[in-house]
Amino acid sequence: MALPMTMELEDIRRHWQNWAVSFGKDLRATTKGQTAKMIEIAAIGRVVDMARTALARPLRILEVGCGNGFNCSWVAQTHADCHVTGIDYIPEMIEAAKQRQAEDGIDTSRLTYLVGNALELDNLTEQFDVIFTDRCLINLNSWGLQERAYRRMASLLGDGAFLATIENSLEARERQSQLRTAMNLSDRPIDKFNTFIADSRFEQLARDLGLSVVTTQNISTLHDLLLYVLLPMINGGTVDYEHPLIEAAARLNIALTGDLGLDMGPIGQNRLVVCQRVKRF
Image (cartoon, rainbow, N blue to C red; front, side, top):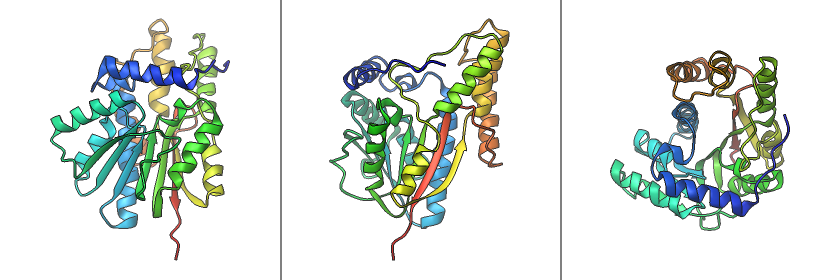
């Protein structure tokens, strides 16, 4: 699989601004299909539950790259004792997120949105118990910038706090491409506004920053194999995000990676890495 020609940062910013204007509060503003979002939301919920058990207190939660607020709204509604902050560098995304918040009836005392850059986060001064990303860092066009954002997030962790990244794996995407080629399917290029991340980079960086790696998991393997390989094999090569089998695969994938705690192998694109700031005594 050939690596994509990545966009310049300003072009990436304009891409997401255009999508925010075009799709508003709709899920399509940040993702192509609802089934991937189902899997991501389930993983975020597992991280929040892990933190609640470990810290035994109401949590201060931050999503970096919150888009139009789908994740933050879900967390705020399902974990009513927590305070959630969402930050995104596209003002139109934040405006859509605030509209969603108003429609969902979530008070600003429990959910706060800010415009801000993942590379700086300079309008955040408090420490958080959970910080997470969901396909955010892949929109920075080099590992150097992705590392910079990760370091800045780590600096906002309180004692015992968790940093979770759901980002796309470069190696898993390569394996998908190899499977497609073996099945006589054409290559699926990576979107030019994305720079996928090599496995183990987050783990090594976390250790360099004094964080403990709690868990890593390929969270979408079953879903991605069906969506990007198996289904195209029988329907003329088409990736069909709305096929009923894809939703069934997502629900089964969630049960396997959640309740059973299985990692089904490094083929699904979405990779979860959870790290913790060791308590200082």
